[in-house]
Amino acid sequence: MKRILILLLLSFNFLVDLNAQEHRFDPPWNKPPESNVLFTVPGIDNVPDLYGDINDPQLVLFFAGNQFMCIDELLAAFKKKHPQYTRIFAETLPPGILAKQVEGGSLTVGNMRITLKPDIYTAGKTRIDQMANAFSDTIAYAYNKLAIMVPKGNPKRVAGLKDLARSDVKVAMPNPEFEGIGKRIVAAYVKAGGAALENAIMKEKVSKGTTLLTQIHHRQTPLWILYQKCDAGPVWYSEAYYQQLIDHPIALVAIPDKENITATYMAGILKNAPHKQAAKDFIDFLKTADAKAVYHKYGFTTPD
Image (tube, rainbow, N blue to C red; front, top):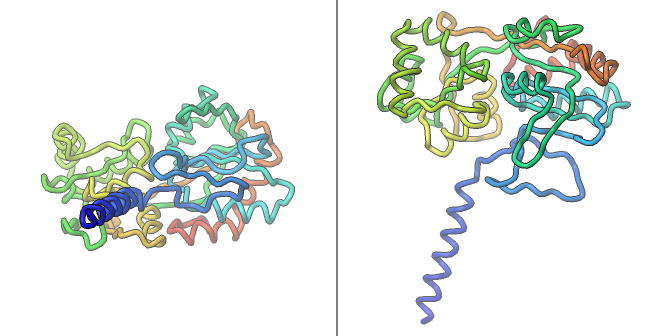
């Protein structure tokens, strides 16, 4: 009887450890705001791309999602420079989703509906140009390039974009339908291997289930790689760099300049921004050395 109890206890502890392992890399990866009650449940309730004060915010920011790693320090530096703004709400979702939210006026996550109007929207230059009539002012404030994210040690020996067409490499790929990076990656495929490479990764492998399309690549790609669902994923350089900064078992495969692309991040003040002065103050802040230092820390480059 004693032996059975010991075996049952060991089995229970094993299951608990296994369950903990399943969520060991789960977001949020940022530091959560201070609160009297902290209630984050890995795999159930973590809402990693909604930040700050949703009640009566003094500034509402819609950031292209791959800047999530900058938010904590960026907003802290802004509040230090402008202490009058204590309540800021930010979203870091794919820019296509944010654009639909701007147009439709609401977003539902789980059981929560958000109807806040943004003061500032950030995205790549192409999308900002497409939405030019929505803004009263725009600026370019950061740049990025592509890299390939792989597990630490790079077990599939992925050396470049052409290797993503291999049948033994399962790829996490941003969906070009609503993730701006998706179209830029496709352009890089064409640079690296022409239409044949694009077709192999985006059509043949999608149909076979060896290219998986993400809905929110800056979360799904690293998680799919960390949990061994995928072998590689093209991402912005800063995203792979960040995963290494926080000591996740991730490696970065560089893409040569002749196959790479450069993204220009732009921010625009919405013409119907509810907090126009706060929006202007934040746009001006993005031009400062303090803001640039945050972006540099996480692998972006900035205008001189």
